[in-house]
Amino acid sequence: MRLPEKISALLKRRSTLFLLLVPLIAVGFVLQAVGTPLILNIYTYFCVNLMIVLALQMFMGNSGILAWTHVAWVGIGAYASGILSMAPMVKSLGVPNMYPHLVELQLPVVPAILLGGVVAAIVAAIIGWPLMRLSNAVGVITLFATLIVVHVVMTQWDNVTNGPRTFFGLQEFTRLPQALVGAILVLLLAHWYRESSLGLRLRAARDDRFAAMAIGVSVVQVRYVAFVLSALIAGIGGGVWAHFITSFSPKAFYITETFLLLTMLVIGGQGSISGAFTGTALVTVAREVLRQVESGMNNSGMFSFEVYGLTELVMAVLMVIVLIWRPSGIIGGQEITWPLLKRKNRPDDGPGTDVVEPA
Amino acid sequence: MLTVQNLYASYGAITALHGVSLEVAEGEIVALLGINGAGKSTTLKSITGVLRPVRGSITFLGEEIANKSPESTVKKGISLVPEGRDIFGSLTVEENLRLGAFANRDRARYKTDLDEMFQLFPILKERFHQAGGLLSGGEQQMLAIARALMSRPKLLMLDEPSLGLSPTMTDQIFELISGLHERGTTILLVEQNAERALEIVDRAYLLTTGSLEFSGTPDELRRKVDIASVYFGGEDDDHCEVQL
Image 1 (cartoon, rainbow over the protein chains, first blue to last red):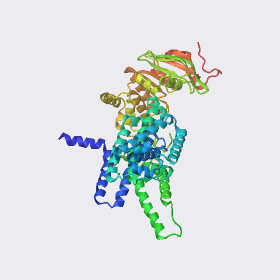
Image 2: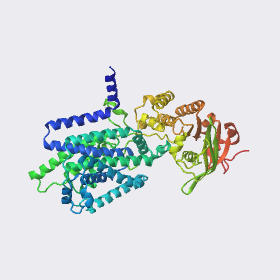
Image 3: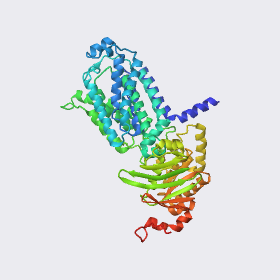
Image 4: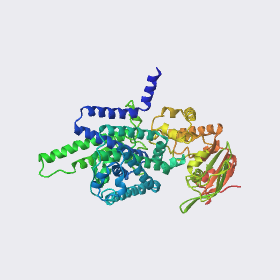
């Protein structure tokens, strides 16, 4: 009876992974069987967001650097995969000025999405080379500036993105099964990365850059690898998202989206995969509920004026409250493990917690 | 083993070291003493490569290592336990130790080394899955030393290991350091607590404002230098005069 022992040892060692994967998959299957189209849509959207937020966690959570550019990689992945997967006819209709050799390209959806990630990773690799040398406020500001640059390029380069106008006509490839598979794969990757030597060295550099250097960690190198890897996954997530939503404009990849992604990551706890997972789930649910409430209020004529932006407002207040109550997020910087009661081992308010800090 | 010659180092416009030379032979335990700002930590930082020296040479096992990156000096076998128990607070004890060993990828060797650390520091076994930041000051210092030892250093450098620890804890740490020395580890020890350091070292160097004031055995140092005046200031203006 060696096999059951082996399995229980694996369960124990990888308990975090099982605690997250089991509900993710189970809910997916149940909804696929009984869910209404609206619920299926929400869960698919949750899975896509989970991919993108976990990619954000890989870089931001482990390095402590506020990653403003993240949504830019999502955008690059979305546009690149769309251009690669759309039929030439549709493209020439949707984007009249597109370069002829781009119009001719057409790939199946899955390779197109993967290549979209590669394009995002290449751009990140070029931009990250100088930027990963910067730390503290300087690093954060330059990343923010990069987001603005990418946004301006997206809104102006109408031979590629159709400018500020809507880019439409993508195939509706992403449904619940595809999104679920994507989320599972990214969850495995993010977990593996966090526990790997690379991720560990990056977390050490986040805690104390100079101490990490003293034990031989090359801070710039580990940050750079994480930055490019995170961009690759974000780009793939962007492609999956694009083939779910099927039409979008550069507005979808700017401050509002960045704020949403940051809320998802920070509310749960950016230092851990469990935190990113919990935050994404909570924010997705809260957003849908608030949206229903908002449209209900507007439709019922409860007020003489229309209530707009209630969702964003409540989300922002929620984030402030959570961060005052638990600065390192609801889950915090340590992963949840089985059994669940070992909570006292977490450094909640002790030294070295994961404060949201542009390191 | 380690030879530092005529080392100059500066922080921007401020020169912190004016031509320091020192030597550590294999198997020796050597102390680097001096008051705050004398340049002890700067010397260690220059040796590890965290700080690039302006001038001078540092050779380790016959190889020039001045201006080498910290990664490469760690790989060559120099390990520093930084001042102020610089452990990674949000990482677990296990992760801290794994980081110390990341240069050697050998799984079996990691296990042996880990067992050895548990023997030296039984408390770390108890706290293996706790975050480093939750440990007490003395435990953190032990973790910092264990982490440095995990890389199997040929030369272990300790920067103020007793700083901020209770007297009992200080005793334990010093006992541990002499224990490590007896096992054959070569040690360069920086200490403010000169009296305690002199009890366990083979030789000592005394630094004042960036240059070497004295070097010799603890006995010679005690005879020729009024140690109390070094730290607390004598009646003379030149308060760390060597009495020949």
